[in-house]
Length: 186
Image (cartoon, rainbow, N blue to C red; front, side, top):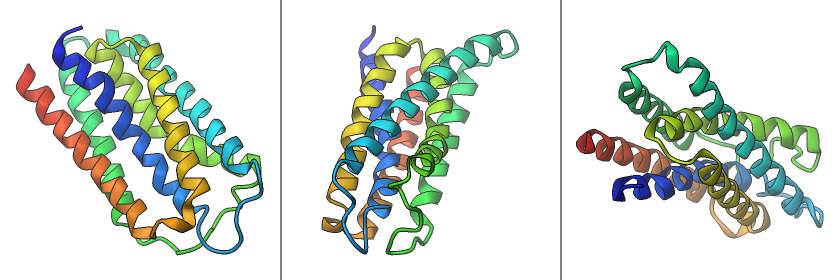
């Protein structure tokens, strides 16, 4: 791998995983603390679903590579911009200051994991077209998702709601920077 690919290898999973922090934070704030074991279960569920979504995106990109022949660079840039815009919009939206969903119910947590995993699905396409080892990147991504969402769920009341929104915006801006690096490295 080249030096620039090492940069992508760590930055893309990190910025994708930051999107999980605000969801974990907003679902652990307000009211009573989560039951014992719930932060561990939910963060593990988020990381497994995120891992599978990233691998699925990588697999799908292989299937559709015939149709995108010659447009791989454009696809990478558009998908990274799409993810970045989604994260920034999510950061700018007003959210309630307390839980809306009962994250202690595993079907609801799984649904949230799938909704959050959409970015990972597009990230899998990016990873494949950049030429990174998808299983390694997915493993790093899953570990970061677990760590970030576990921290958000466990310590949700310690952070302000705006901190979670700021992390979404920073993740989006970080992905825009990755796009610029990608454009200048072509």
